[in-house]
Image 1 (cartoon, rainbow, N blue to C red):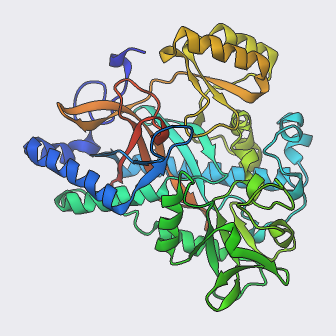
Image 2 (cartoon, rainbow, N blue to C red):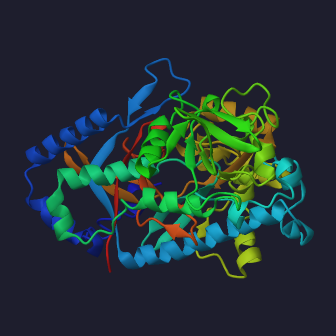
Length: 472
């Protein structure tokens, strides 16, 4: 992939400042680089004091790391965002309808739009959810849609995150940091606010409380604990929403309700925003060795005694093999053509696709079907011959475990480096919570801090930056 073919979101392809960035660039051009470097260090110290960290699994060094933050915002025009929002809203509607159908009448399978074995043999499918009518009809209360840009107005969905999507706390802290560091920028640019997200999330969760709950439902956040990679976010969101942060040992089933321990005894919970994966949610119904969940919570859930957000079994909709059918899923449930494009995808479970992928590993990105965080993937163009040979063996041994995609020419945005502004590849993750469907204007922008890198995950050396959506 040649560098000149890459679309830069600030400079376009003709090295002319694009309209959304003009005000910002005029300001930046007059700034003293020494002051900006000092502000950059100040922002890093602010993150350190606030405790904005993530945990890295499988490493021998310290478990906690600081999230790298870049002070140059990513800027999107209001019209561009309006187009994106319509596409995200359509996709979230389709995902929710798909989940209801898959766990009820399975019309999409009867119509032959998705092979039946893609569901029945999928480890993310939860048979215990069959026939369960979820409170409010909402399966995906919080969804993260990963988007990449390849040119002006050219957006692709890289993947859908509907199990326990994370990242919104970094979006909020990025904005708060920028407001503190550069208040003058927000008077020069009409940036749409994101700070209302916790209020919207609390309202959305409460609106999906079970019918037996009181007028003011009790909401809590279930965390696996302090060693989880996203624990900072769990604590942050609980605090911002004004609800309790609980672990499995704080909860028990009493008289058909899930109740949390308080200084005044046990109090029933109406809505549990869980950040624990399905397999660990209930040792009586899933993994019997789990110490993270609540014994019997699934029985209470199926009886309508609690809302679990996101609903158990939602992982089937963000499985990367199912992702390849998303254009058909969107059309089947909405009757509309997809507004957001999928990245072309080869399902390695299919012999012809597997043969093509094996022949072209050097040019493709190969991902685990249930993978996340940038782990377990191969980026062919930057991989060594040894890496490719090892991955070839994995593919042949378990082809159903992988999908492959072309290496897209991802857009770049500038980061503030020692030499000044320099381009890096980015990915955007909007965060939305259906209440109707409400989409936060901006989302989390992840940026590859290493030159030429296409991997933006924090666990793989990526950082974050504030995302501005301008008012029209």
